[in-house]
Length: 121
Image (cartoon, rainbow, N blue to C red):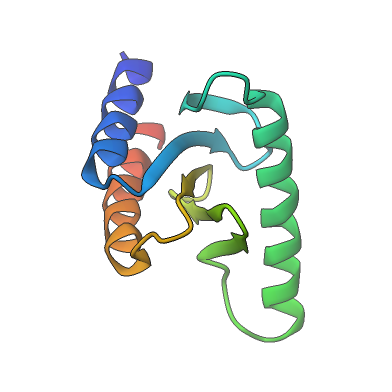
């Protein structure tokens, strides 16, 4: 039941913008809960890298007195990676196209994270 609800949220998120190419929900320690990733993309690798980036982001925000980390944004030549906390136990990772309109995506990801938080708590 929980997996179906997470799948539905990710499906809605991916459908909210043509700029979103993939999304996943994972635990803060990197274990995949559900995902809509392109074929050939390794879920375990996505989970491990997301957990590592969030850990580094948490430490950086703390060390530089920026408060509690909310999200990590990475920009590459082929698009963006956005990781947003969905409560204390889960993270939403989204892959976008390079020309993505981030303002709208931030809003959609925030809504999805709020919905996911209610399910995983």
